[in-house]
Length: 124
Image (tube, rainbow, N blue to C red; front, top):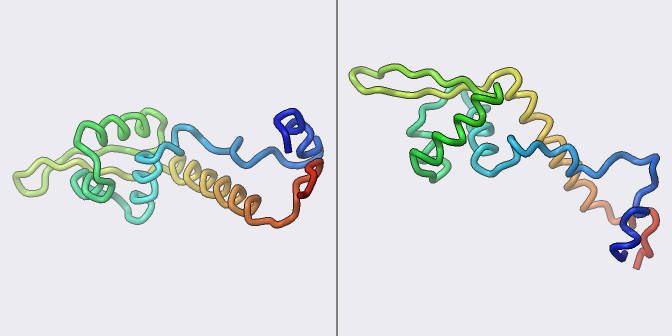
């Protein structure tokens, strides 16, 4: 299929391309990692998350701020004994955003695994 043919690759009655459903806030690699790790527990500790994602304190802090400002996570600061700790938890909106991202990714994979040629393509 040529670039010129791309506008006719799928007719107007079909669903939009799955990548259109990807959320830039969620889809970024570190932020997607934060959301998926947070989904596995009620709350996660900053140090654990940093180690799991192999990022620096500053890098993780910046991504957490973006997610918090978007309402996808909550951040709780406190102490474990005498040591300060930061815990991260997914909000209901964060759960919904992660679910939507995963649906979009599954749709993209299904589209690529489907052996049928796209309508309007040469099929060769």
